[in-house]
Length: 380
Image (cartoon, rainbow, N blue to C red; front, side):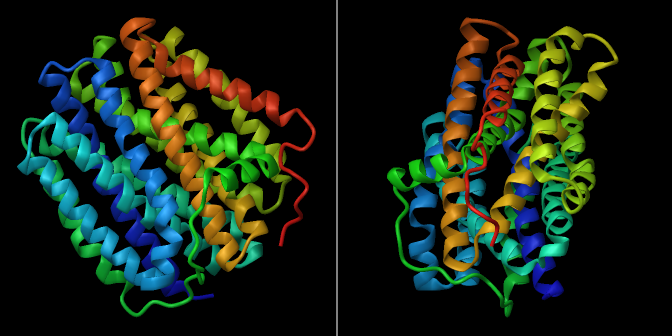
């Protein structure tokens, strides 16, 4: 196994997590200070979802022409430019366009990076090494809000830190090998529908986690502010959710190498349901802090287990294609989640965010109890 390449790819993807973690909450807090409501902030949070769908469509075609490593480097640099322009052009309509572009280029990084990692790891360590990727990415996002709390939200320092990370990280990919080969194809929604029919539980879980992650970095700070907490406490709550996601992914990955992965999948779905329902009840008590940890851990566990199960089944071009479908589902979740939560928070209930997650978790539990939730395809 190419350990140096594994850690180089891991580090390049982690730079994306830290860049987003330090810049995206700042965007939402800046919009809130400008007087925009929850729905407008939700629209901004959902904008990268359109970019995700576009990035998923063109990723394999571009990778076949430019090469996986070259394309990842170009997209990281394009992401640095796009995030930097958020500080240079403080305008809501222009920010919508920039968030769209950020969604396109960073989606391609995720598709190729996750495919590269799943291609490199050996089967007996797959659960732990894929979980290390998920845990490290969550930690990079955790560091973002914490760093933003130190830098302050009344300036653009958080944005420029993100620019610096995405500018330097492509250097790590120079000379790396072992990337999956990709044919030139364009995934369609018809292909996505077939993927969802074959692996419905994974499809639902990925879309649900995408909605979770989009809302955590953008709407959760606003939700906490609306519940009467200060900006510092709101960012600390966001960080606590990501701590739960990060710290428990390695144990979940280790268990996935020894226990039935489908049983773990159901356990994470049930825990997400319970923690989501507990948030509105325990919001004003000290118990909310361990609930935030479980909330993040259970949602992150679903995504980590989904990647592990995908890696069992596919290699090379089929793996890139599967991850392109994962990205499509990610885009759908990122689009629906913030829009639904933003609209619900403004016009229906102030607790729309956790209630929406509870509804999604309940749907997943019902799906997992049915026959064929993971399809009939045998692991590769």
